[in-house]
Image (tube, rainbow, N blue to C red):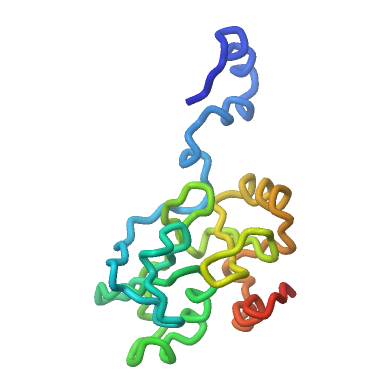
Length: 173
């Protein structure tokens, strides 16, 4: 809730961008919000085998055309999976994927993986160490990079297939 005096609120009305400070975070997000299936307590990451539901702040999900969902304990394993779908899901192909979501760092809600921004090399670690930190908007990404000493900010299409393995080694180039 935004706590403004009447005088301050009237002053803010003069600037639309200042008014945005009082809007709920979801209303300012640039990334598309998704309604995805949630992992059950026994669902494991197809890449590393960890129980996904134990890490709700980091869940990523892929849904195939037949409705089958695969869940990941973080975006790093999600990107490994997407780069080599047949390796991790026998008989499946990337072109059969109908939805891909990651958990927004600030909003803790599923957002479209393709529209999120990803910070790497920050002081924020995921369940398996260095991680892609999904962010819903340019403003949130700028705040995150400043507050958490991020090294790089990437869009989905700009993430090379070998970068997740480099993050495992603590490399961010």
